[in-house]
Amino acid sequence: MAIHPLTAARRVCERGNWQVSNLALQKLLYLAHMVHMGRTGERLINGSFEAWDYGPVEPSVYHKVKVFGDRPIQNIFYSAPAVVSSNEIGTIDEACSHLLSKSPGELVAMTHWDRGAWAKNYRPGVLGIVIPDKDIIDEYAARTA
Image 1: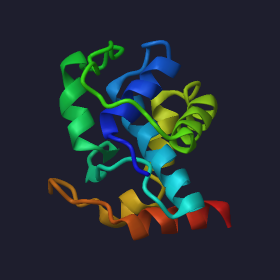
Image 2: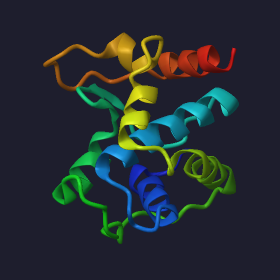
Image 3: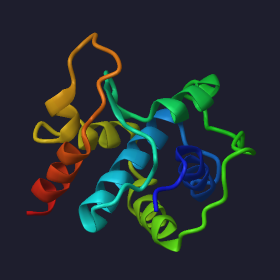
C-alpha cells in the first residue's frame, strides 16, 4: 500500500539525521519509488513525480520543504501520517543505506540517466509534466537488465 509522500520524506530525513537537503531528498524518494515499483509493481508513495529541471520532483514534498533552500531539512512533518507497512519502510531504509552517502551531483547524475524516465519526459521550461508509472518501471527494468 502506497504511503503519503510526507511520511516517506520524514523517514528519509530521520535516517539522514536531519542533514538531508531538498535536492537529495527528492532524488532519494524518486530512486526508492522506482525500486519499489520495479520490484513489487506497486507505488511506494501515493504522489506523482514530475520532470523538473533538476530531475524528478514530488511537488507536495518540494513545497513543504522549500523553505530550507539548500540547507538541511528540519522536522516539519508533524502532520504526516504514520507508516503502517514495513514493506515500504524497508524500501526507504534500503535506499537510504545506499544513497545517503552520495553527493548531490552523484544523485543528480543517477536521476538524469539518459535512458531513464526523467529524460523521456523532461522538456526544458515546461512545468507539471508527470512522469508516468510505466516509464518509471521501464527505467528500473533497464537499470537491472
